[in-house]
Image (cartoon, rainbow over all chains, first blue to last red):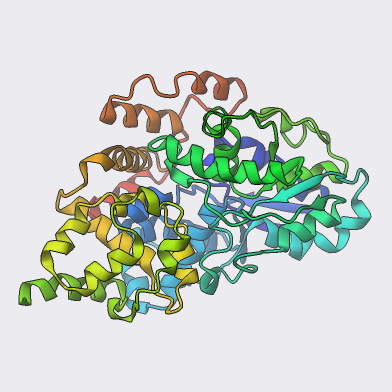
Length: 282
Length: 180
């Protein structure tokens, strides 16, 4: 059994608990053990880097330092926003030795900066993909819109993950799970991110445009890999429908839920019942 | 004029971005999903910085634009000169908050950020109920989303008790050393 470090991040412990549940269930189905980083803290998300750069770097670095201390070489970070913060932080520290020292002093821990940080698609690509097709028992036979959002693919020079305007990694995994990914225009457009509470009107508009294009092009589900994208597209559906002046029922499910279903896990095991917009496929 | 230069020099020093590289092609503004909500679209921000006019710099610190930027990174990716506009926005936000120049129409956005950081400061992780309570007491939007919380709780998406980490002293130390 392969053992990797695991940074769930705060939303996977709360509003996106089904994401954590499905990531762990899929990992288990493929004999991968994900072990949580001891005593991890919040990465600071949008709030920290908007208000104080040094705080943002320090909060993320503490997580990386704890993972190194625990002896992990690779850490899986399912939340696209956390993945972005941790990867960008490690990049900034590694290109500036003085900054690395300063942040290390602030957090009172050493940091080498050698950790491999994997998002969910990279985890699957690296350890699951070659066994995926032979494990599929109930092909996910639906048209899906693969929605990547911003923070999984950008900034490309740091994350080095997939193409910018028309990424493919999620589409390929969904094809291997038996689904039919559609061509559409909103793969990497922003959902409104952290404005869910403070500017719900902005989220209704941006997420509304995403949901509408997916529905117009015949998708039966939107596939996501970020808890913020999921909650904006799912929990904010009443506001979205009000903005669109039409009722769109398309469900929003995590890539790990879709893959979980395809390899024979039950809807309950991947937490489908926790979504606000009911999931009628599977 | 010397005073005017100073703000831009500091910005360039802190961000490592040379504002003169922008040649006003407008791709950042064309791709920005929030440009229509902003008082100055990203390309105009760049132009205002290029003038080195202190008054325009102050207008930016007081703008809606800086708080509306969601850091989606689309502008830098589409910029032919790869100018790191999100980094500039971070710098301007930090300065705006530090100098108490936050645009009054953007106060809800900043209140959310502050409530978010407070939650981390005391427990080490984001405590969603604490975040919303903190946001509401700052903004008086007391009735907003009242129907959402019970639904989230029923679906097991809203833990009632915060998860305290062991290293809260370490976290408080980080907050005090970074002076927030």
